[in-house]
Picture 1 (cartoon, rainbow, N blue to C red):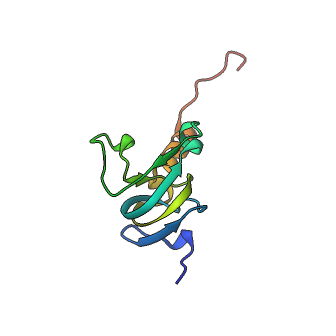
Picture 2 (cartoon, rainbow, N blue to C red):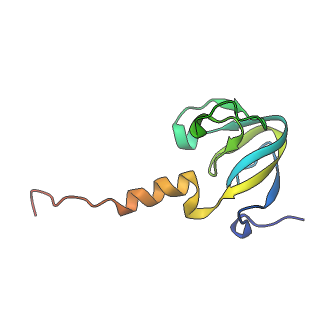
Length: 108
């Protein structure tokens, strides 16, 4: 059964494959040769191998998380949705760019 990304909620289990966009912020539960490219977030065009093991206590360096807006470049996995929409890492960045108070310009 296929569910549209806009209908995903926290706690959903998703199966992801190579060539797909990360549908939400997800934690990898099981994987087979899964790699993700985080260029849309980091600017680095490097594939990162993901697995169920975190690999780091620092959440931004964890190897068991994939962020929405990035792309799976190889493999297959089962993952748990832990954030959607504005609550994702990408959504938080986007929201912060629209809520920053900008000072008046000198011309004004």
